[in-house]
Image (cartoon, rainbow, N blue to C red; front, side, top):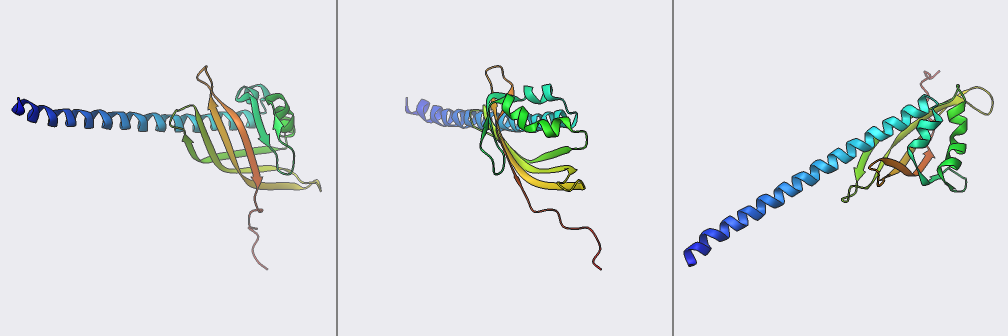
Amino acid sequence: MKMLALVSFPLLVLGLAMALTAKAQSAAGSRAEGEQALREMEAKLDAAVAAKDSQAFLALWAEDAAMFPPGEPVVVGKEKILGEWAPILTDPNVSLTWSPDKAEISGSGDLGYTYGKYLWTGKGSDGQPARRNGKYVTIWRKGPDGKWRVVVDLGTPSDPPASTKPAS
């Protein structure tokens, strides 16, 4: 009986170790797939804004989404958020582009975030061409339908980029 236990115990430990390793690899694979999905969602949102497609834009937001415009009250609800984005989505002379530097999802796989930098181009208050850069954080939630949607959007302006004009 002892001999059977001596042989069985190492096999049991080896089996458990292999199962845990497989589970960890599966979780890592799922996380990587989830993070790639968030990057793809960011690209879809960016493309909708570039195309000035308000319906495609709206489809990527949760009903209860919240936006935090700098220096303004929180805007809650995707229709109100669409109103906030209207100047960007309707003016052909305004563009907003961004790219995530990082994407991460929760262990449960239904919540994630991205952050990165953005660039806004348009006309300044003086009517002259203007550029503004900044940083953003977007929180995404996977709904019961399996689709990722924005639940929180926050952007903050940064200092203007350094001048590229040669010093005189």
